[in-house]
Image (cartoon, rainbow, N blue to C red):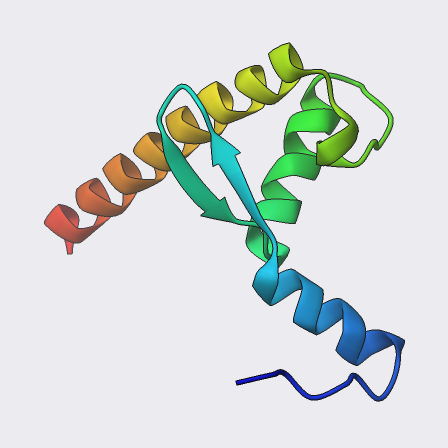
Length: 88
């Protein structure tokens, strides 16, 4: 089934966001590149004091560093959520 043609720039961005995925070679998994991933990526860039550059334009070693950081973040978030649940 084909997706309808976007009516405006916002719709086009929304469609692209739902379709974009990034592959993490080290963990051998795919990540949907949505607004949540974009926020995490921008946080990673900010912590390193890097100007914004599209993820696809990063050097492969920087992409690997991002996914290492991202998986650690996800693990930390799950741990915090678990601890919060235990205390309630």
